[in-house]
Length: 190
Image: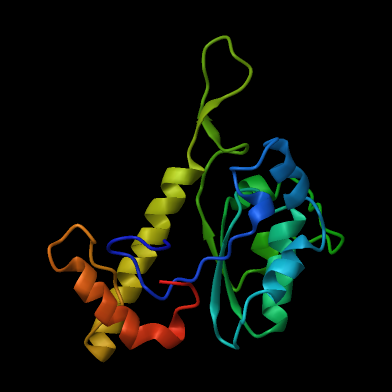
């Protein structure tokens, strides 16, 4: 959703370095997403305003980082959209002291309808399924939301703040104009 041709300029990503997949050892990311308080710190680093929308994506919805983010943002009047797997989440307990999972905190819940455990293909003779679905399904759902929001903006205002491809001859210039027009809503360096 962030900084993509055809995506919205006004999507402001929250990058929690400790849960990015370029960490080593990679298991550090699992430890951090289970550390209560880290999501609150992330939320407090963002200048949320009442009625902002925060999209949180967690397949299980059980780990403290996502629950902390939801709770802290809601306290600031932010609307939470939770992209999760509700049936999966209902099979696990929360790892957060509140006992809550993402689907229980979100104002809008979008269910990816994946399998419990995310992997979807059972191999003959193998105990563990393969082929996780949440990445591709999540991307398709989120891009469909961008399309719908953009259409509604065009219908009501006549325009939508959508990036042009930088590989179009006039893409860079059009993007510069859009960034200038929407600079108050963009919270990242351009």
